[in-house]
Length: 210
Image (cartoon, rainbow, N blue to C red):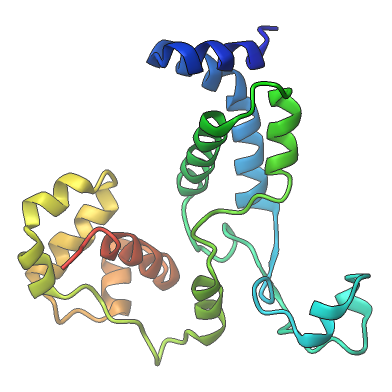
């Protein structure tokens, strides 16, 4: 098998797309395996970013059996809870691997470095606010949909060109035609769950800088 560390050394000297493609073809099986595990199998604790005082001071980290633990109980799975698409996780991990390649210390072994670094990896969109929304969201307290005026101010064509997923373009087109649609109505029209719709809308909002 080609020495990936040597390939990276050569890539850092040459900076060619061909060399980078060779590197990614070698790490792609790891990216696929880790992405699938993270999306389909891994369960994240709701208390991921909000540990209670007892847990923050505890060195044993046995929250599930500790009588002092007052953390928010429960877990979530990205696939079962319809929080995102598999490709979102895979793309996020690919971006992380690209960063690791760029900052890699060539005196080390890349395979060991990659596995150690990605051992506790989680998608970048799993922020404190994202997890907080899982606890606080309800159908009666829906987040604001995209504002039609903001879409128009941003430039519709410019926004559409930035959207590489058809479902995101469909969301924008539907809201431009009828901004009075409720979240539930829009989700039904597009064949999405409300949680998945909220996730797609957040991705679109991130592109709109007013």
